Length: 455
Image (cartoon, rainbow, N blue to C red; front, side):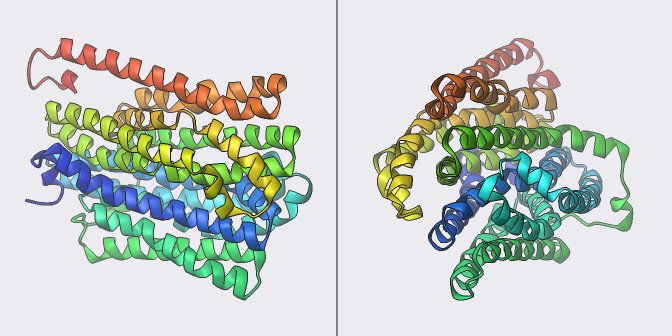
């Protein structure tokens, strides 16, 4: 039995553990390296360094989400193709992913250099923040194409049944970054540039490992030159599904644009630094939900392709339950030890005092995140891009951005922080209502066991 065939035969909870734990470890390592990066910058560069990284993060994610979107879109096709016994389609899909990832990654890298200052100013790099932000981002841009390749590869590797290899693709850059940070930032006293080169170097190492895995032939996907030739049908489906991820990141980047400008208006540079710390902690708290989300996608996709509808629904249910329980447990620890956690990032007493209540407010409804992430990913996995897009846009697009435009004008800085839990609760209500309605509709339509409507 091949790695991918196990998706249709092994117990769902066993598969979720096998897929989600490596994925969660990989995301955890990425979160830790982001936290370590912020710790070094905060302690050896200062408040402006944290603010600079905070401004650059959404832009980097927006550009690199090209690879993530192509990866998720193609992985969905590959999972369903393998489940349906169509390996040639899987091969052709991977070839198209490679062509699209590098073409678009290089294009956006060039555009980033051309419009670097206007872009950074738009995202909140104002006043004293602009200088270090330009220094940092101009180096980060160099690694964008290979970062896009790593993100694309990660999803494909998981789709073909190698979650531990996918984990290593994420762990490698984390380890490299944590090794290079003290060397470049502290020993060579390179400051914010050292942080940028450490991050960029980690991107290249991750891409190298992913490329080695594909070249070794372990993936079970054999590429030929003809597979690299774009196929209109594959690209249409791939970009339709993957566009959900790109739109999600686009909305997140728009969120940061609105957020950073509001923070600067109502709290200045220090408030942007506060959110930089909150954002790093948010990445850490969301690790279980993200790991289970990524782990569930290839299981759902394969079983959908194999028309094993009960396994599809069981995967969805168990993933949501597990993600919510684990997220709630971690959330409780974060809320209890908030001051101690903040002191890891900075010894600035005023910054600590400002961050503690803000973090607790932002995190109030964090356990509901799993429901939002998994429900959207479920529809991506089965190829229903419209439903996935709808649920993807609920938190940031439908609720958080409008709240950030309205509440600060009434409650100033507190209005920014309280917008987050309100958006989390509102989007969770939309997601669960949509899922319950859709699953009820599916069960009503399920007259024949082989009907595709039962998916």
